[in-house]
Amino acid sequence: MSNHNPNIVLLGSTRGNIKEIGNRKGVIAAGIAVRLKSDQTISTASADGGLLGISVGRDMSDIGYTAIAYKGVGVPLRLTAAFTPTIGAPVGIDNTTGLGKAIGAGVTTVNAVYSALLSDGGLAEDGVTKVPCAIIDFPGGL
Image (spheres, helix red, strand yellow):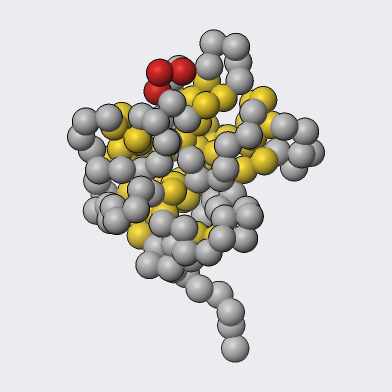
């Protein structure tokens, strides 16, 4: 008997082995788009700076840094409530929260596509289950 559920993902992990990961000062939860501020810390707000990548959670040394996937295949992205993306569609990032959202006002369209939907969502670092998320691919960076 297997406990593996292909419809849920551990936020902070990636499903693919094509990835480039680094870290920056600041803490942003796994699965949220990260932007670089002028003081070299990180934020989710587009007003603060350009997109770096998707957070894969706290750096393992736990010293106030966040690990970030700058490029990747099979990377989980948290979604806004009630948003169900289409596989193969371009990814939109909410300009305030850094969550995946339908493309429109207040959203930045990025160089990524949705590659899988997760009916059971994600498992967050803090243990919260069924966090709305999807899997995205951005092998060339956002």
